[in-house]
Length: 321
Ligand SMILES: NC(=O)c1ccc[n+]([C@@H]2O[C@H](COP(=O)([O-])OP(=O)(O)OC[C@H]3O[C@@H](n4cnc5c(N)ncnc54)[C@H](O)[C@@H]3O)[C@@H](O)[C@H]2O)c1
Image (cartoon, rainbow, N blue to C red; front, side, top):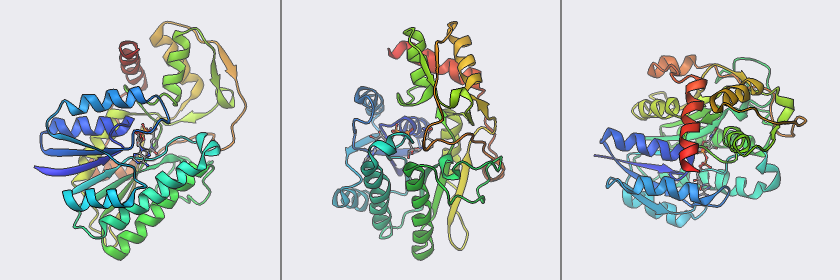
């Protein structure tokens, strides 16, 4: 059995990835998370408890900032593959607490790179974001577009990761792959993200806040499309001279926030009360993923339609609450 490490295993994407990996029965899955309280810790614990029911899952509570512990864990366990998803996520919170982005996303990433350069790791995959494209209007976003103008420190921290990864890949010949996720949603989703907030507020008859008056456009991507792609990418480290690759993972189906809300309302059978908010600093007007590169690489086509994905989320949410 291959040994794989997933950082951020108690997080939304990390949890789903661990479940998918365990279902293949091909991996011993190791998870690291610091279980921080950025959002309701009960949701993280619920995810973690589900994972711990499987005997092939092993958890270590470690903060990425703790270089010694990270190093000991990785050198001791000799993972074949690492999928690094732990990070401080969220655009708006990076204006409130930039320190945590610096520590978790930049210093934490550096600690991992410094450790793996001493190992024989076969593949290191890490989460980047559509936010690296900034407020670009050059649609759809391709991996080779300019990403030098991130609009928030969150986006900047992820862009910095991509640059650091390239250098370590070049100098130490480590196969590293960046995945630029586009607005991921689904069951067990994050309470700080639109779908969770909207569903909770509509069910409680409270008004929802629509930033940019609902005119934002987002390439919403269902969680299963993300995890099934990662499962395929795991086995395909870059064979290039500098083995660093970057892929968009999106749905290539951008939708207006207004339409997103309408679909939620239809699924719930309820109408929302709306507060139309101005455009927020750090936000971008639209995202739209070009997924040609990934489609060619792993034969990827997003399968889950927005309506079905939202229904799945609502089904989970009602049970969870
Ligand atoms: N969800 C999305 O739409 C989206 C979009 C683009 C990129 N991403 C990226 O994907 C990754 C996963 O996102 P998510 O939505 O699952 O977020 P999440 O917040 O649910 O998960 C991240 C997990 O990492 C853990 N973590 C944070 N800092 C840590 C540290 N210093 N040490 C150890 N653990 C730490 C958190 O406790 C959390 O459980 C992140 O890197 C995020 O930036 C997510």
